Amino acid sequence: MDIQLIRNATIKIKYAGKTILVDPMFSSKGVIESFAGIAKNPTVDLTISIENILANVDFVIVTHTHPDHFDTLASEKLPKTIKLFCQPADKAFMAKANFVNTEVVETQTTFENITLTRTDGKHGSGEILAQMGEVSGFVLQSKNEPTLYIVGDSIWLEEVENVIATFKPEIIITNSGGAIMPGFENDPIIMNAEQTISLAQYANNSKVIAVHLESLDHCRVKRNSLRQKATEKGIDENRLIIPADGQLITL
Image 1 (spheres, rainbow, N blue to C red):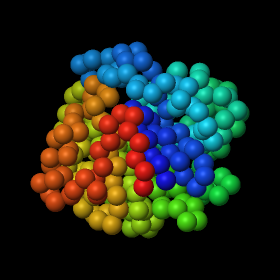
Image 2 (tube, rainbow, N blue to C red):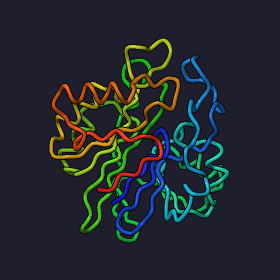
Image 3 (cartoon, rainbow, N blue to C red):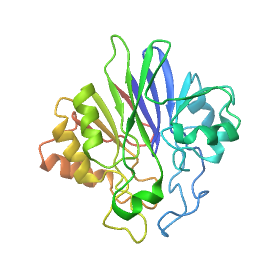
């Protein structure tokens, strides 16, 4: 299995003979309005051309439709006939965008030899949670392949813990940028460094791949600081992988 971080939460995965694109955001640097009043987003450019990102993609998974996970350019560049999986909350969005081969995953579905199970999460806590909308994660399973859990935009909480306990994934992808919204600085809307480390400690038989870092102005966690804090807790680079944009990981 290959996992390539494109940028932010955009990931390209080769799994069970299929190529999967997750949460495509294709915008050039500075095209999307600021989330935190610091800089326009994304704060860095793609390191891979859109044509290469789209090459050989068999299907797309969209965890939710915030613009840092599914932007206008991705909607324009993806073929409207491509197989696309989304959560129930985004059914109308995808229909309005004219994607004609969309499958809404209520609980679980199978695409050829891959089983996809949609999982719950919370895009923050406290007062900010109601403003963030619904989000999902996905578990991928296939014969002779490791179980892969894409957590999505969720903080570390019981729902995520339960997924790990139920599916025992060998690989977990976390969105670990510690994003915050102005006025709610004490309530991250995705995992921060401490929460990522808590997940890695709980899932001590899994490899954790931390993404959603250093691409948006409201994400405060830096790769170097996450690496340092994990090392201090005895979690080495083989257990917590923190890829650079464009980096290919072969597992």
